[in-house]
Image (cartoon, rainbow, N blue to C red; front, side):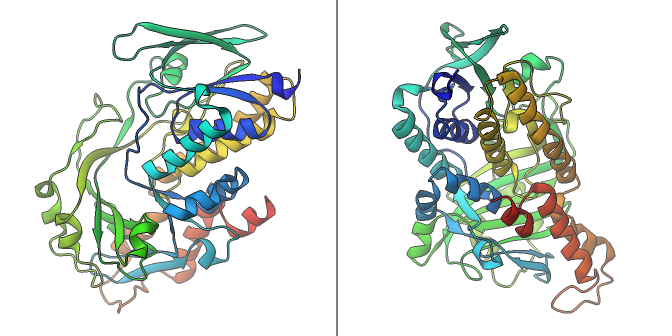
Length: 419
């Protein structure tokens, strides 16, 4: 069977599903993408695309479009709540990578993927208002079934050579594989996420994290258009520990966030170079989310069916790595599938390549990933450091940063070798 004769089915038209569609199309493999919602809208707030994912998105011909709207991140820094630096490092092009690290509005990225997929695959192959409900398979094919999510009425069934579940942290396909798994795991951390357009801080392209495990602020600019006007469209996350039983709440749990719920916790903070009152009070919108993930799975794939992205390995946002790992899933799957006509073997090889490493990242992120340097300082600083913390040796901080990059696949040396 030639590659052009293969027909793939993707459940989920989000970031990972559309990336997989583009990667497979580039290899000459036909795919149809089925999305639950009747209209795909530019939703969400900021995300980071780390160099390993950008390198792969460039292979799909998307880099120029991404650079038009995203911020090329120049640096990442960690601070304590009094504005003292813990660790700074250049990122992306400023760190000598061949490609940038990009901070981008999730909706902007989604619309670029959608427009490109419709152009290349044809709009008839991006099918809305079809919610995945089940599948049947035999030795030669798989048939996926879709319903109208609003009323459960059957919509269509389609037969193909393989099925990918890229349908997110509350994946319907994953639930079929593991019906007793239950809801996502709550971390004990609540997130208030907002966007504010205001004067730039630092060089206007920097990402920072401040605080410690119990109280943290993360911020980074995400829109180039705002930067060109001398402003910064800043994505920010205020994070506070709130022990709570959220076991029955789903991961798409999302409600309006209120300043009174968190702003006073940051009242004593003084970073020096950021007007935090303005950041919070002039927010265009604030939403409230629990930080959740899912336990690593013992198996993603069954015959001609597999999981991808958050459906396979939902992880905490520590390390800013979730979307990037989904991009790597998509590209790896396409690369392996184009080398063989044995689809079940290709799917097993994809899982073998991706499951163990993403499992390690899930567990590392539960230990706050590279952000643990902030807690190290919180626990070890005697209060005698100057303007920059020296209580934890620099080589220890550097090792934390490098170890995570190697684990996640974006250390500079390893990434250059993988080109």
